[in-house]
Length: 119
Ligand SMILES: Cc1cc2nc3c(=O)[nH]c(=O)nc-3n(C[C@H](O)[C@H](O)[C@H](O)COP(=O)(O)OP(=O)(O)OC[C@H]3O[C@@H](n4cnc5c(N)ncnc54)[C@H](O)[C@@H]3O)c2cc1C
Image 1 (cartoon, rainbow, N blue to C red):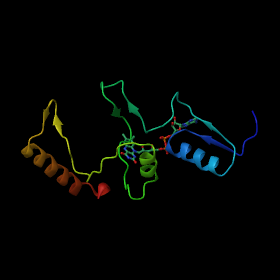
Image 2 (cartoon, rainbow, N blue to C red):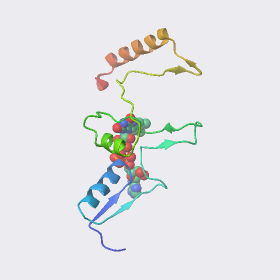
Image 3 (tube, rainbow, N blue to C red):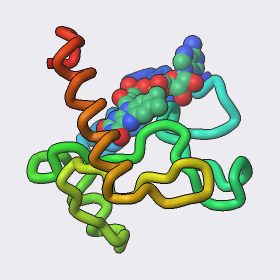
Image 4 (cartoon, protein in one colour):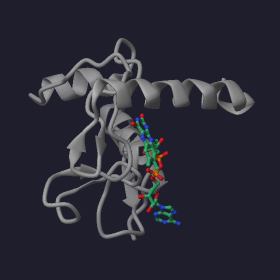
C-alpha cells in the first residue's frame, strides 16, 4: 500500500469530516470503513418502513453553529426549523388529539424531573 499522511478509521461523521479537512489541507489519506456503507450512526433507510426513516441521527442540533447546516443548505436540502416540541405524535395509526399530546408532554416533564441525568 502506498504511503499516506494520515490513516482514518471509520467513515462516520468524524471520519468523513477528517477526510474533508485533510483534503483541504492538501494532505493524503486513506479512509477505512468496516461496513459496506458510509455514514456510521447517521443512516437513513428506505427499506424498513416504505418511507425514508432515520435509524440514527435525524436532527441538526444548534443550527446556528452546526457546520452541517451550511453544508446542507449548499447541497440544496430543504431544512425545516423546529423548536424541539413534538410536531406529529401518533398512537398506532391515529394522530394524537390535543389532550393526548398534552398528556404526553406532562409525562415527559415528569420524567425530566425524575432523571438527574437528563437535566
Ligand atoms: C438513534 C440515534 C439518534 C441520534 N440522533 C442524533 C441527532 O438527531 N442529531 C445528532 O447530531 N446526533 C444524533 N445522534 C448521534 C450521531 O449519530 C453520532 O454522534 C454521530 O453519527 C457519530 O459519528 P462518528 O463518526 O463519531 O461515529 P459513527 O457514526 O459511529 O462512525 C464510526 C464508523 O467507524 C466504523 N468503524 C468502527 N470501527 C472500525 C474499524 N475497526 N475499522 C473500520 N471501520 C470502523 C463504523 O462502522 C462506523 O461507520 C444519534 C445517534 C443515534 C444512535
